[in-house]
Length: 148
Image (cartoon, rainbow, N blue to C red; front, top):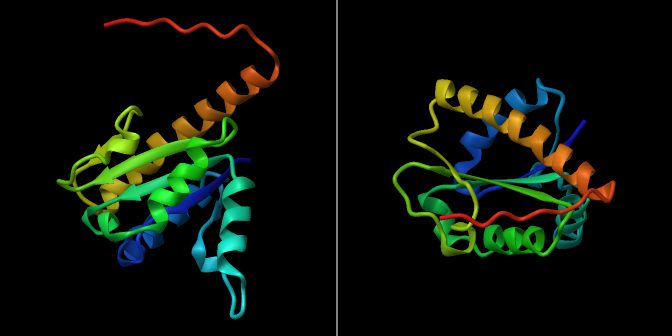
């Protein structure tokens, strides 16, 4: 199944602790900073985990504006054509300019019921990203339709 790297600010650990088991129950392999061990070269380890993932799930809250690492992780994924980016904005915060061109899922809070619903939407989006990536790998024609 798909491997999901979760990018978040440490202050939002409780959200991750609720969401990760929901995604794992759907057969997703989850990677994030909790797999680090004492003495790990954490930058190399996390970069490798991101590059080995199918999608990057970004949990953006009011806390994330203080992070230098979450935007850097988004930048890595934006430079890759193989890794999907799933941005989720939680609460009444603005969408950062560097992801405003993407469809962003906005949820009002991190209550368990809200995160359960989010996990369903994420599961569908992960499947769609994998399907799209596999179509591109098969050399299918690429068509872009511009509309207003």
